[in-house]
Length: 245
Length: 311
Image 1 (cartoon, rainbow over the protein chains, first blue to last red):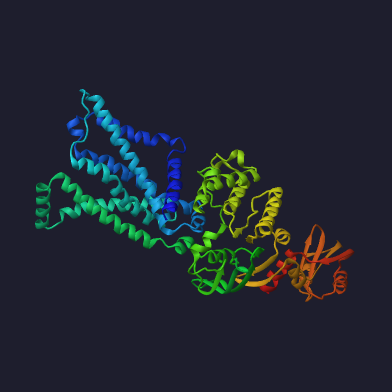
Image 2 (tube, chains in turn red, cyan):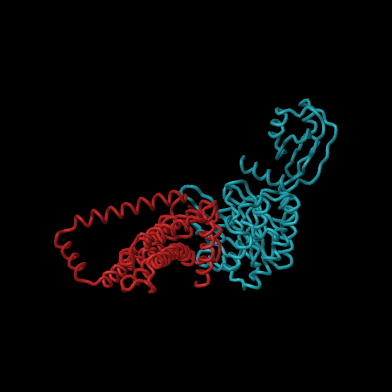
């Protein structure tokens, strides 16, 4: 299983990198890193830049990048007539599924880490006083280490579920975009519609828990969601259905 | 290796109300080049999918390399190679990376894989362009690479769906030699579908003809020619009108009638005599200059079977 997983990951990574850099698009990732890793930090003070909230931007960037990449996972193979050959190989369902999810997660994670590192260098260069400036609280480090993979796994798992049954990459991308928008609006309006007691309970948590505890709790919730989505992906991955689709 | 590489009993597959495969019984001896012939939509692809364990039969069963297709599809896929309807190549990747991926999937050791990739690509005349993205290649080059892929790990059974489609005559002939060598030297079983009857005749030890999911005939090309092809007669002359062709087709002894290159081609049913038909042609206003008779080709057999089934 491990060797097969690595093999699929290797193939997917190569395809993602080649696809994202084809047609003169090799600068696309550099543009993202330039904006989020250099331009925005350039205008920020170190006190503001090295706060945990600022890490949400690169974390959401990784999720955004994964949305674009994961839609191609199965729908792209179907569109380019490579899926049946892949399914006719000795690869297990899990190796194919997890290899594809891991490759898109890795791509998003690498981009977000590049943005964070570039941002840290930019802020240090602009504000250099002979002392290295960096993140100094536990919450920030937890977000850096766990944010992109956990959020990335959730997005990639949802993306795989959509891509498994989409006819084309475009259809998968559109469904995924609409789904995420509905989720975002649902959370925004849903939280406003919560009973007053619940809101008070959440407010008490927000004001009494430390930032690190809040981030860890959030990571725990996302981990549970990830596991549920991965199980759903495994259940929906049916070789025969994919061949006949 | 079991005596039969493939053994199917009463294999049936329905898609809703459509019966794609109907009670297929098949025995393919190990080390044989087996040709599976049939028109489009006959059930060839469904059969390959069932034999690879990709889909389950509605009824019946099949064993491939001694493994049950329902429960041991993984074992079958691990021991076989398949070129399906489409080439299955990742066109963004290079030829080398395409083969490397499937070699790693087959768990070939790295050194052996490198050597095998070089051997195959050199043999196919693609070695110099191994680093190029496949998307830049011609159709023929892609097809050669697509054929190399299932042969990479030297499997005991290879499924090839229309392997010579898109190849030039020289490359197609070379591939036929390779496949024949693969079966004779390595004892591999080759299950191929093709529309090219001449190819099936040259290459296959055993041939089956399928139509609308039903097996119409199975045997060696020689057996089939003598069993169902009857006699092929070429008549040179003039006045072979469409009305005459239609009238000939209505004759009980005629399996097929057509005009090719100005000659009237008749395929007669077994035991039929050509003399009464020549008289009939003359009576209908045709002018006969020369009559040549011989054994029908596999294509004649195929067309006769299709026509009989249609009637």
